[in-house]
Amino acid sequence: MTTAGPTVVLLTRAGCHTCVAAFEQLVAVCDEFGVTPTAIDVDEAAKTSPDLRAEYGDRVPVVLLDGREHSYWEVDEPRLRADLAARRTP
View (cartoon, rainbow, N blue to C red):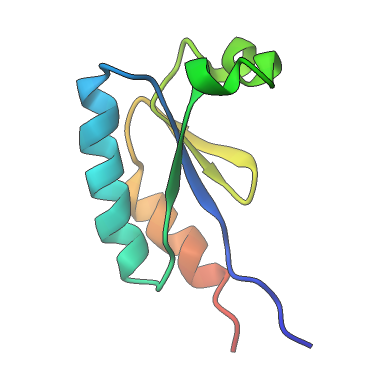
């Protein structure tokens, strides 16, 4: 049985310079583990999922690891590395 790897998503907002820097940082960390992060603009997503912006919109950038909030306002690199390492499949 094959299991999917971890999912890493950055919740962002257009015009957010901190979000751009966080995504670059996230890409670098995730690359170490063979994971490709994605980004979701909370304002764009609100057109179909207003709850996403309501929950996270005031804290972007927000890192979601496997759908759960991992960090916000910045990428917690040591914690993310540890959590991604723990999710590696043998």
